Image (cartoon, rainbow, N blue to C red; front, side, top):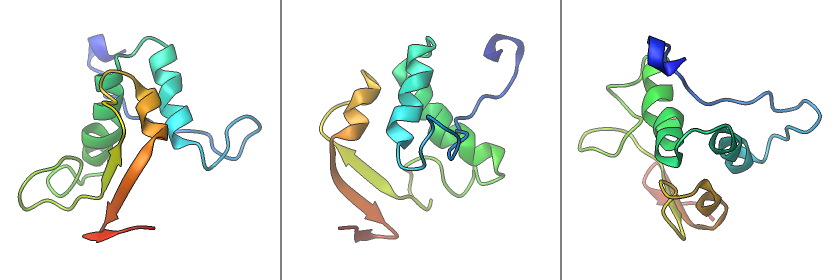
Length: 98
């Protein structure tokens, strides 16, 4: 679909059987299992999703002057989305989230 110009973003049907609300990392891993490169899935979940919501100039990537929450994980999710379950630190609105 992306090859013909369809913008792709991530999302879930959370709340349906087999799709819990608290497994965002697992939902993203499904895209990897479907053949999307991990880096592309990260881009779809951040940059592309922000753009689809009309917030592409405000958030979606780490850059000076943009709003951003930060998830620090114990690996590189661009190499494998399993790294997203090894959360080391969360920053939201400039503060550490416990």
